[in-house]
Amino acid sequence: MKIDNIVNKEKHSLKGIVIGVLIVLIISAIWLYVFTPELNFKSPSSVFVLLLLIGIDVFIIKLFKHKKIAIKKIVNPISQRSVRIVDFGAIKLGGFYTILGVLFFLYILIGGISGAHIIRAKAYAKQMPIEVLENEDFAAQVTPQSIGSSTLPIIDKDIALRKAEGKLSTYGSQYSIGSSFTLINVKENGVEHLVRVAPLEYNGFFVAATNYNSGSIGYIMVDVVTEEAKLVEVSEGIKYLESGLLNRKLSRYIWMHYPSSLITDYSFEIDDNGAPFWVATVYDNQIGLFSGQNPVGIVLVNAVNGDIKRYDIKDVPVWVDRVVPADQAITQADNALTYKNGWFNAAIGAKKDVFQLTEEYNYLTLNGNTYLYSGITSPNNADETSVGFMLIDLKTKDAKMYSIQGITEYRAMEIAVSSQSVKAQNLTATVPILVNIEGQPTYFLTLKNNVQRQWYVLVRVSDGAIVLNQDLKNCKSEYISLLTNQEGNTITDGLESVTGKVSRIRESEGDILEFVFANDVDKIYMVPISLGVDTRFLQAGDIVTVNFLPSDDGTYLVRKLVNETLRMK
Image 1 (cartoon, rainbow, N blue to C red):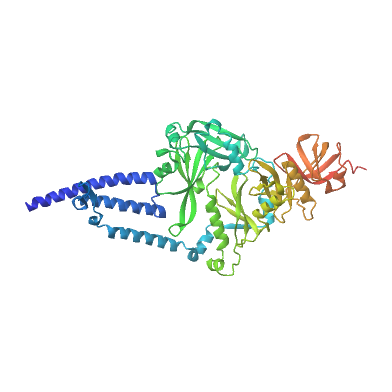
Image 2: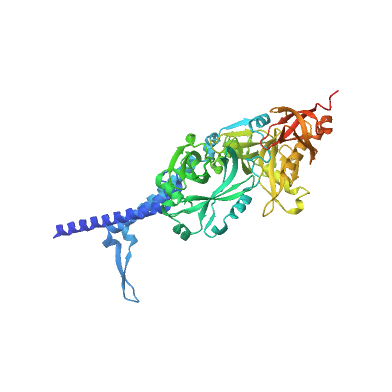
């Protein structure tokens, strides 16, 4: 009799364990599917979620193993009806949960100490090697960007977003502009264009459910130079979105294929054929357990058919613009500038050679690559001067620091909005973009109201000299005149020469003459009158030889002009 009781008890206990395990497996699968934690011990949030899941699973197994002990009846004194409740005290898991809590505390403690700046300052400083260059290198390596070229943005993200929203039309109730409004280079008929692109995301659960099979209608593209916005409809539909449901939710879809990868920064891009893709950065924590985030590759997802592939950073397709997230690039650059001479020097020491990036940053494109640009200043918040600026390639993480003293981007914005000609208009300045005009580092920005751009502005980095104009071409002409009329501006490198007969001539703003040659009327040459007698008495029919700076916007700045007709004897 006693033996039978023992056997029945064991059978009952085994049955409870089996049921408990099945429930645990179901709950675990649902939990992982919903929360998609990276199965990587270098992710603190994921470790916490997994420990929490373990705690719940053990509780369920224990509950079903000791069901007779853990579940008891109590009688409601008012209704006299009995109810079943779980006796948590009978399950006796307090010690187990204490162990889990202690383990997580030790994990956070060890991870925090192993990545502490005070003991790992050198490691942080070495994450981003920085090549230090001089002003001459800037003129040689950063190619002159012509104001009005196809890769110099005229409008910022806010204005581009307003233009994009204006293209939603009847789709506005169903879709919204995606948060990933990425600035990228695209080639169309062999010509590079700088555009912002964003998918149309679902407006709510029911829209996503209704369009689960067909997908979103397409994406919005805004040319930030011409200010043209258009809705690009994708015939097969964009099915993988940040607002998607179930397996078509972007983050979940990537997690299902690469559950142990650390993923961040979901960027929407299009290839040169206009096909939509998602680019997600894969990173690793290189310092301690969860510090020193560093990009190591990408996961590329075709937003239409879901084709997915992981690439190492050296093998990323040529057309992809963004690999390095801006926040990781800025953090690594700040660490390199701050901890070059160690933590003690930066925190409580003499602060020798301690610098940081300025608060403002922007993007620019050079030779088809996208760079993050920011000035470099001291940690003193009151300091509005810059000791240089940095360009970080967002595809390779290559960083170049140009040692050029001048004003910060924020100071340039202050100068622009405080100008007497616009002060009363209560305008807002966009974050400056760094351009190279005659070898001079120059901030290019615009002044805008709540609706649209109002003024173009050029500010010389070295001293804050400023030119404003409501016409882009005239703004450039006036700035060129400003540079020409000041001493020391004797740039001769990179000049080209041509001789021809002047066909038409006219005087522009800012002490500038514009003329064309009879044999090539599509090229406009701009020459400051202040260059001398040969320019001052220039007229149609004269034969002249000019040395000029090459450009890609159809206008050419003349640095030297010899009037052969005027000098004939």
